[in-house]
Amino acid sequence: MIHPNNISARLRAVARQYSAKTALMGGGRVLTYGELDLAAMGLARRFLAEGLIQGDRVAIQGTNSVDVVVAMLACFHAGLVAVPVNTRFKPPEIQYVLDHSRPRLCFSEPQFAAGVREIQPGVPGLSAVYTELPPGVPGPDPETPPADSPALILYTSGTTARPKGVTHTLRTLLASTETIARWELDDSTVTAIAVPIMHTSGLNALLLPTLLAGGSVALLPAFDAAGLLDLIESRRCTVTLGLPAGMQFVAAEQEQRPRNLASMRAWFSGGDTVPVSLQQRWERVCGGPLIEGYAMSESLVIASNPPGAIRTGSIGVPAPTVEIRALDPDGNPVPDGEIGELAVRSPANFVGYWNDPEATGRTLVGGWLRTGDLGRRDGDGYFWFEGRTKELIIRGGSNISPQEVEGALLQHPAVMEAGVVGVPDEVYGERVVAFVALREGRSASESELREFTRQRLADYKVPDRISFLPVLPKGLTGKLQRRALRDLGLKG
Image 1 (cartoon, rainbow, N blue to C red):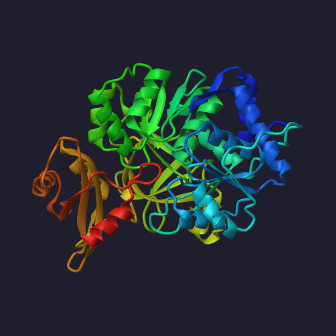
Image 2: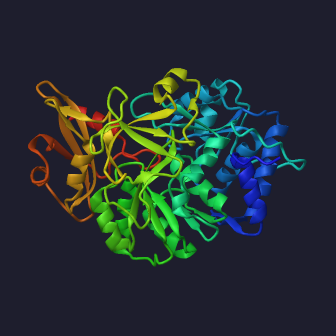
Image 3: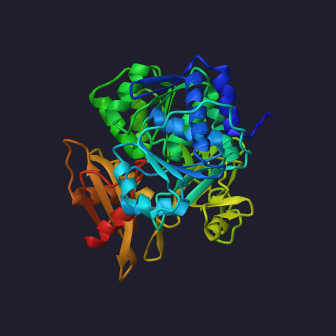
């Protein structure tokens, strides 16, 4: 039986077509498509032989490794639900995710397993914690699960509240790979992955689309600027993606010790605002454009700049099969040029938050995903990110986008990273507080940076205070943790 909208069936078809071709490289291991399929199906049979049934959850905690990929694919093939667990979580955070998702099994790489084992007795139904993948078992292949079966629960970073479990099906996962069509991945693609495959950036934007195209994937265990450039040079990689904060370090590393990057066809970035200053620097340092896109766990890849038609500073145009609107507070579309909340209609939209119908109802409205992000559409159909509704700073009745202030600070040659938040103020409602990390060997004072931004921004947008940190706090994916900055701002 053919399942055209099912990522499990599609992955198996690609494995048969490219059986002898390299699929995965990582940790000194190389697997062909045939070997990857054999390992994933054998593990799928093992899970079912141990008594798991379709719909059961399997927690997975690990780095970018071949074993993590095999575990993920085995879940898809067996009709189980993969639950990635953030490798930076402490036991109480792990406890929350496992209590909420109730997995039957957990695979945790040895360096992380202590945290899971500490809380295992308090998680009902968690029967085993593996620190290495159990051997596969022979036998007939499991029946292909229905396309609308839950397949993945991604727990959001929880910057404002407890993490929510973003649930995707085998159908929405496949749809997400088709929204990346304009990236033109094919069987000659060699994708370098340094962002976590435990998150949508590594899994849905890079790993799965590359495998479905018959390309090869080169895994870096965790993000490292020098390691990523070395991987690209040694493996002749053609595509990669990074968070803006990480790509700042890649550009700096390439300036200090240039690698041969001639094999690269496309560099992508997103997940947070990509500063125009970084994009301009990238062209000069890495020999090609840094292409900005827009994605989120709830809808995976939503928009990107088409290669060859890049509009610097824009998040691009909607991906194929995706619609985007900017809405006013009443849910009505606003005219081009005006800022509104971005709403998305896409076959890759998530199906709901796990065990949270109220939050699902607030977010999925009439078939549209209310993103909570602010943006505007120009007359040519390009969208421009203008911040997040919950991050907007309101000072004396005036709205201030943190990203705009950060963009001004990042234009200073000494500034490597910038983060801006609002803190309460008795007179103005909120004050603008900035945190910066300086480039190695460079210096700048608070007064110098305040005057620098004053020359570029209206006075009410100029930070009231600028603090210096060695590096800014980030989550697993490298995204700026504004809640941590806000806590620091309140202490200051």
